[in-house]
Every structure is written in C-alpha cells, then in structure tokens.
Image (cartoon, rainbow, N blue to C red; front, side, top):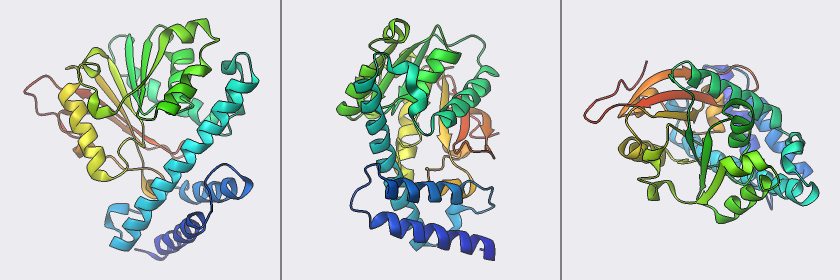
Length: 283
C-alpha cells in the first residue's frame, strides 16, 4: 500500500473501533456522527483494492460491513415507524429519510442501465432483501416502472410488516407491491416468474454467502431474465460487499458502473444465460 492508502485504512480502523464501542447502533447523535464520518471517509475515489489487504484489515472490514448493515436496518426501521405512525399516506413524506436523495439517484442509475438492455419494460420485478423501508422498490415503482408488479422479499418478518404498512394508503402501490417474509434460498419457482431480480447489497455479507446467493439465482431465475446487483469499489468496499463480474457464473454481464459521486453502490446488470450456456462472467 502507498502512504495515502495506509492513512485511509488507519482512519477507517479508528472509526471502526469507535463504532464497536457504542452501547447501541440505534439512531442517535453519536451513532449518526460516526457513520457520517465513515461514509465521508470512504466516498472519495481511491485506488485501494480491499482484496489485497492484510488478513487483519480484511477481518476489520468484514466486521465493519456487518455493523453498517445492522445500523442501516435500525435506521430504516426507525424512519419506517415514524412514517407509518405519523402520516396518513407515508408515500408523500419519504423525503424525511436522511438518505432519500441517494436512493433517488441510485434507482435512476439502476433503471437507466437496465433500460439500455431490456427490450421491453419489465412486468414482474423481484427485490430480494427489501428491508423495513423499501425505498428502492418504492422509488422504482412510483417513478420508473409504473406498470410493473413488485414482489419484495426479506428474511425478517418485522421488516416485512413495516414495509407493508407504508403502501396501505396508496391505491396504486398497494396493489402493485407485495411483501413476503422469505429467505433467498427458499425461493425457487418464485424467482423464475420475474423479468428482473434486484439483489440488495447486504444479502450475503461474507464473500462465500454472496457467491452462494448468486449461484442460487443462476439456478432458479428464468433464462433471459435480468439481475441487478449492488457492489462496491475502492474505499467504498469498507461499507458494502464486493461482487466481481467474474463471480456471476451463469450470467452474461452487460454493464458495470462505479459511481464517483455520493451514490455509494456500484451497479452490475447481468442476464441469465439460457440453460447450458456458460455466461461471459465479465465485460
């Protein structure tokens, strides 16, 4: 590592140590300040390759991603409850969520990349790992895929219940968005019914889990269906797991996009190859 990369890892390690000492990751001034500092540290473009870091730094990174995921879930649950308990139609007030603009940008990016390759608008969309505040599905359904039906899956029943409450008062989205408690590996025939499958960044935090998730999707998605994956690049890989194009066995990789703005996640668009096809594994 160069001096800049060493300083970056040292700074991220310090923030990780501070986060690890917090008594709770429930939203608070201290929690919010530390995670904001972490995000601002990781956003600037960096040539760092996390796969080449020492074992100790790799372990710290894995723990940090888990902490980020836990904090993100608690933050989403907190705002999902506020929206559902305060407003007659929560959909009119999604901008209360502090990172709402980020979801607007990410959803537009994903839709734009997908539309370059999809020959017709998707009719059936699955979102795996939708969470208690399913902003991606809500934004995609309301702004970009206004005729599509969305099946949202999350392993946590409380997340499913919270998400379902948000669309009850909206006749259109309430009819088009369904929420179900399910583990990805319990979904087989369901996956084959969708034109597009979105896989949330935190489904499969450890690398072997992510590869197993991709393998399951390759086995059960319909031939020709599209997969939209979220990954991370450079220092942003301290916040989210990395998926490499070569990991997508059974898929043809169509687009890989690494944002350089405040959108944190990289986006990969891939297409399930016909049975017997090998897939490109990267372009």
